[in-house]
Length: 288
Image (cartoon, rainbow, N blue to C red; front, side, top):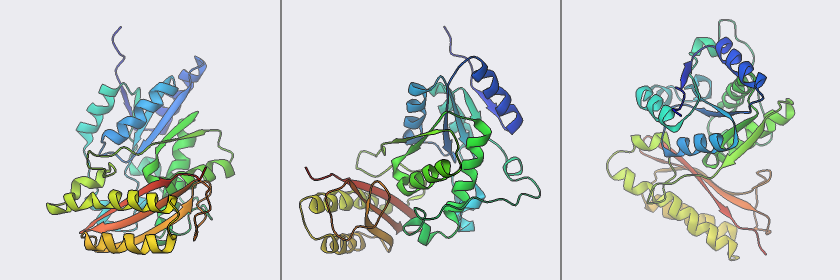
């Protein structure tokens, strides 16, 4: 039987009507929020959603409220035709692509702010970023009435922010965190990777290499402070001009860890190559 065509919607009312029709049939709904410029990592989220939900919505919305740097918003890659083709080929049921005016109509004055897990890391270096994320994701959850939502672990702090927001606001949705997809050389897949120029792309692999080595050493019992200091030096020597952060945090609540105490933990980093800011994380396995 031929696969039904993917529908493209740009209005909240049309999306809600579609979801109501699905739910009248007893179908479950999965949501994959994106900002477009899709790559294999995004498609892995869509496949995970298709495996767990009866109907899948992928949203594409370059959210202006989560950009602290106007030039970053202006240069964020937009690949609409390719994105639409990839999602249709993957079997996604609805592409939801609202305009800025649809998401933030005249008079819009409400913002969602999540304390605690948004502090530090990207929250410290991108003022207002997580307020923008929490607000737009809250709107997408309410607009879609999805039963589950799928996010990549590359944005590990974002997952904590969204999970806290949904729990605090009693939004009945299950969050599914999916493993980070990586290029052959280990670089975490990201829409921003395509902005790496010339030798920067080769230098970028040093970020996952450094994190992987640091995680191994911490798990083996080396001093956290010493390992992090040496990792920073290695990144600078490898061409990273600016390191926003490189920290060890607890997996469960993002608590800062000065010493590795055996609980599941994660190394998180953000560093810049030229004009491109890369983020990544590596898990440190729990001690037996």
